[in-house]
Image (cartoon, rainbow, N blue to C red; front, side, top):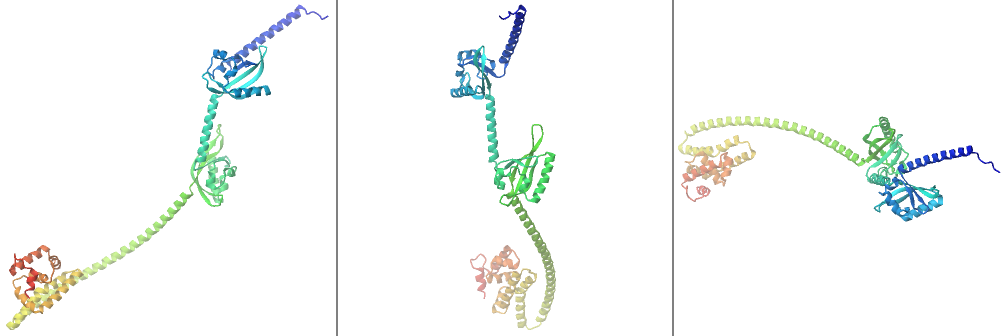
Length: 464
């Protein structure tokens, strides 16, 4: 027979049980505190899916209150897509648990919201149940969606821009490139990853740019508009304009550079062409300036020659005036001698001298004073014509019939007879047309045909 427990032993066991019950109560109290105040939703359902306990965090995402859940009762009604619920239950049955399954529950208004659902089998109030931990990730989903959209926009911008966008690490090796490098240098983006910009440059250019990069990398400063020569995959040179900014991590640690390259080959060729054109223009301007200087020198020389010719003409004019004076003196002497001849001879000589004095001397004087070659030629022609008249019978009759005319009127009458117009006579006589008209009126008056319709030239011709 077993030995009966003593009172002291029973009291000890009771005390131990009471202590255990107290610890259980404390544990239950702590569990309830954690359960009720947990920031994520916690719910407990029996094996049929009926909710038997839940905390406040379960209600907030769906905008429910406790009475709503009691009315709904079964968790099946909270799933937005029953097919997803079935898949979750299959996973739970197969694996014995579910971790962070993406599901959608219904809000009170019927709209879905995104959650991560974790399930564990537990014993609750001495019954097999399932504990559900529900984390509302609707906001996270929205953020993910915005991030995806932002990334898509960034990738679209990077791939559609006409510039080559790149990123290098602190050693200068490419760690990112868009596909525009294909348009610039003929390489696919994967062909340049791990290589440095200097690997695509002529040796002398690589040394220069590598030195610049070391300076930028040391100063951690942004740079822009750095021109550099690169070699295309096919071997020809491409001029790029490079700009970049330093990249740092969240702790301020230097990581490398990020930037863009722009193809300026055509612009540089145009600039070189423009420089060549400018050089050619400057050369032409210099040549033209030299020509102008030479032309100016020749013009000055020509002006000097003209001045010399003008001085010679003035000297000749003075000589002619002296000769004219001498001729006038000689003419006076001849007149004195001629008066001593017999009257017939004197009369004939006087008429001849009168004709010479009135018809020839005025043009000889004008010829001496004139400067234009055309006029001098006209005067010579007139002298020739008058000399012919002097030896013709008309001269005697013309002189006798024009004895009442002044020398100028005789000159005008002679030109009218030759068919000259008022304008022609004015130009040859160095007089105004109005003065010539005045002399024409006087001639008509002296001939007795003023205020008559008789033609003056026809009347003069009829005196032959």
